Image (cartoon, rainbow, N blue to C red; front, top):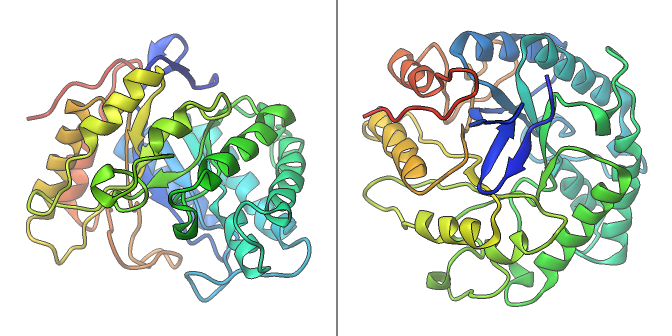
Length: 330
């Protein structure tokens, strides 16, 4: 493989446009089988990327973090991530490695978003991760082209920072830490839900995704839209305009629908079409899971072979030819 790069509003791989398509996967407790199972299933589905997230959380899921000093360097956890990266490498699948758990560790230690303690934690962690050697295949993290993208946080923005420069400044600084540490991968601040600092319709007109893209330390932006045809806020044109103005990609990093929602297949198709129409450089859903049937997952927003019609739809949209632009599916 080679490093995924950005070229204008697109991602590229080996000089050709590359559309990341896959889903998030989480809940890696127990053996390495969780990683192996998800990578194998993603390969069978034709996905070209998985998002590894929430691997530092402790049981019971979902939001328990260890506040003890050094918990972010937990070797038991990181050796599993090593294994998961190697599984993806062997399968030819790229990884979006989401570092949102570092924000979680910061929160349980009582640090304030953007303060000196918060930034020192990220800087220490980033410098450690950059030179970490994968215990399975010997690859150095900053030089591992299996990792296509790093997300600094799962979802960007702190409510108390709205209307200030705190959000922009924080992600600009942390992105700078990663660039200085030598990471060769694409860096983005983390996804935004439409209600989080995204649009003037929410009374927030400054330090939005367009501002993040203005940072030389931020390579792209993403969004986490959870809405249907009936209740959507059509912010895709706004994202496209930010993307074009800054000549950097935007993409849908996370979206999903509960199985109880009406016509989930049509909702998925709708979201893919909206993304393609307004220039999303890729689509990742939440989540590629078996609702606990493999012993590791958690119910909710499932995409898996256990939902054959939805699963087949994602397989259709995932089709690529030599990483060429994906054809529209009507």
